[in-house]
Image (cartoon, rainbow, N blue to C red; front, side, top):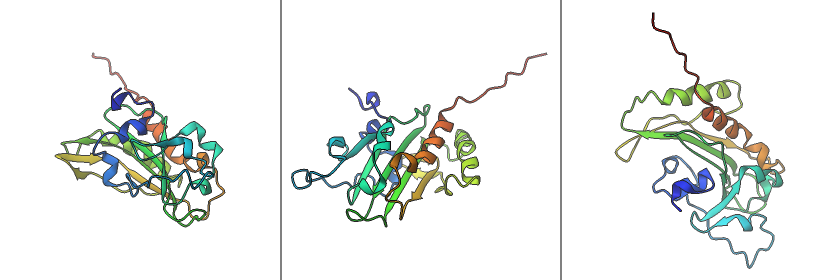
Amino acid sequence: MTAQQGAGAVGAMSMRAPRLSAIVSPTANHNPMPDFGSSMSDPFGPYWDSETRGYVVPVGELGRFKLGDIPGHSTIHVSDLPPVPEPYEAELTVTNGGEDGTDEYLSVFCFVGFESEDPHDPRAARLRRAYRPLVDARILPEPMHFPMQFRRGYAHGPAFTIECRGRREQVIGEAVQPAVLLLRKVADPVARVLVPRV
């Protein structure tokens, strides 16, 4: 099975190297190998993925967990996301950057974008149309702005960090909803108006 055929979008992306999101993600590939022998209380143990060296959890199963359940210094890679069309890529992660049981460094990170040789690629407009209303409505924070030089071209697309400090009791599925909404908007087909010739 190739990386492109992976079940989850994030799981598949995680096997590519380097990923577009790696240039902006504060947590890319930083998960330590958990010690399941010493901690039987890790609710994410069954989701450990040795290839990505992280937890990979389908978005539909995030309603079972709270932000405070995430082990310290660990990241949940969310899979089975709304499928964005090519050439776009998407990544959604939830991180506890602090110690077990703390909520000072809880955050959601979302990136959706694409790589291009053109620093003014018009396909970036689709992403702006998707995220700008969500930012204006304060559903999402202001994103990190692109384009940014990447490999031999440019990375285009918004990257969002949603700070979740003090929200350890919030269900993870609720915390990621703004990002999932963005991906759904990007996944929506673009309406094309056909003008008849006269």
